[in-house]
Image 1 (spheres, protein in one colour):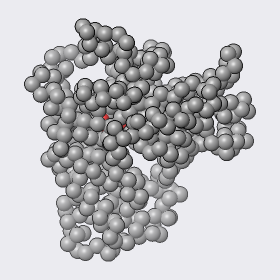
Image 2 (image 1 turned 180 degrees about the vertical axis):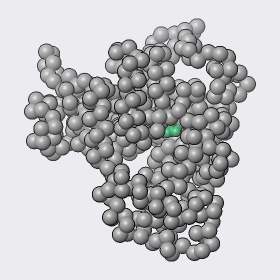
Image 3 (image 1 turned 45 degrees about the horizontal axis):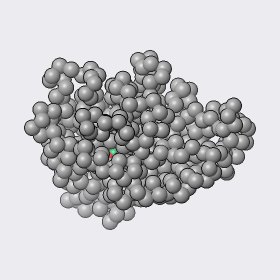
Image 4 (image 1 turned 135 degrees about the vertical axis):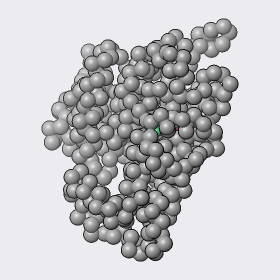
Length: 442
Ligand SMILES: Cc1cc2nc3c(=O)[nH]c(=O)nc-3n(C[C@H](O)[C@H](O)[C@H](O)COP(=O)(O)O)c2cc1C
């Protein structure tokens, strides 16, 4: 442990193995944020400061992701550390597989794997591609996986080798080689496991002080088998916005810490200036839990900014309507008028026409099923509002400002309070001071 002026130096916190494996200064990660909110500029800025960040690839078109990867590769030194988000896609496994193709093609060596409920063929293929036996007799795996989990069974899957049935199927289909598959039993799915406590965006709402020790113990138990495998590092995310919170995480044996909400309110973040202004005013009480649109049917939740916004109340009302009714036709006239005039600002027919056109081009196999089931059709119409609300926020639209969907946890409010009076508050302080270049104090 190194000290500076009698205090612990940040460089000494967390796992030295984490810092060495990723060649970073600090055991600190900036997590992915969808649609390029965790932008090329953010990932590059972090890498230039010797820190690890993951590009928010979720929701980007393959063309945009390819462009972003090309930009990162051309503007960063080849040894720079950075990664990309890979999201599980239960609805569209082909899309997940296509993203893995893109990542492998571009030589992306680090991914942050999230939203997994079990290991998928696409994720296993990424993990094992290029695995070989080293001269030291151990497996060498070039593709590093940081797995995010908010539940013990998902954590256990990341701490274990790939499921043998998936490995065999990939080998038989020629998607991995025989020698890659032969090493699978000696390789865990992840190098790093991030315990995702109550956070901005998707959340299972588990408190950090419950989840982290539980996953550290799980690692200690599962990680002992087989003894030759390198230990998996366990870090934590969710609610980290102040030095006190970060210190608590390290006291609870976190090997690394990961933040999200607070990074959305930076110069480099890919969201709109209007959203950054709203975030910079938030207090710790200004967030709300809403249904997660991509998993509306199973009742998954997300945490968003509430202050000054109608989105959280409207999103929850749509979910209640979805649960209480079996079709759009069942809604009474007053409700339809309210949705069309206030929430959607267009007719339900127009929303369905737009949704239908999207499904026809993006997910044609799904369309007949949705068209045949009035409840599914209603779910898709309601989901349109969530997508629209995200677009409004990211564009900083001056219309329908109350409908912005802004994923955010209370860490943002905690940071705002911590920075108050310090001269560092507000998202653009570094711009105002005329410096967005790396400095030794960032
Ligand atoms: C705006 C926003 C978008 C996010 N999008 C993603 C995403 O696409 N993929 C992902 O793995 N995590 C996503 N997250 C979660 C973050 O990577 C991180 O795990 C989380 O924000 C940490 O908790 P905190 O918000 O309390 O700091 C998102 C978070 C925010 C705030």
